[in-house]
Length: 351
Image (cartoon, rainbow, N blue to C red):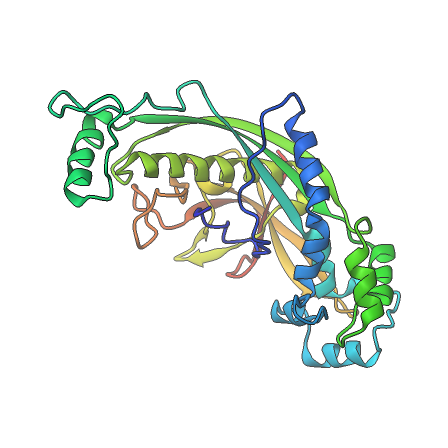
């Protein structure tokens, strides 16, 4: 719950970070599907996008405007239309992003050495069999820590397995039209409020894909405790699974920015995004069409320099962002293209 969200994703946190299912014969995918429908996650995401007020049950498009997809004139025009939608509404850059809303559920699987043996005091401290260890007592806690947190008890590695399931929010013309005509209101409207509250089926998530990985996280000089070791393992395997799901689903891919310094090509992506030496990246130039939609035109391709891939994984950098090799970004080399400049967009291609 304390692991940060990937920095290239907008945070649509719904307050649901951790779910524990009882063990049974039902597959993890079926249990996750049941939870998503029972908790109405898709409906809650729509509520999040449109700033649904828990107090007065109204909506607004402030979040869309805040993200930079509405200018003042477009917002005023939108409100002036009294929510009557035109055929080209989905071409609007703000609302278009709703269709790029994803949910990832990480299913962590305990391995056979997941659980430590039952704690006991060493021979130096005698205890009755059922005697309670008073850890609220500072002296007692200090003695306990000296016994159980010595270097001999620290794990050198922590193996972890994680299955990650990717879902996408369904949002199309039909769903959007029904939402605006039946539910969207910026003033208290009891009829629309009642309709929205009672709707449990109009908004859905669709399953896209699943990826599974296992890693053996090793202790290093930055990992001081077993807790940090486990947290590092969890963060890194989630990042790995997310990067591989992005390879499967192109719409889930995040874009990065190209930087040019002293004639060299750089971008602030690395091992966290599963950058590999044989990867190929498109260099894209962004432009705006007359109707306001964005267009990306490929002007070249590049690849990472094998020994200059930045280790930006969780707990791998110092406070300034440098990894153990002193890298602050990943360096790339040109495959083809010309006239590159800082600010162009990189997008990984299918290899």
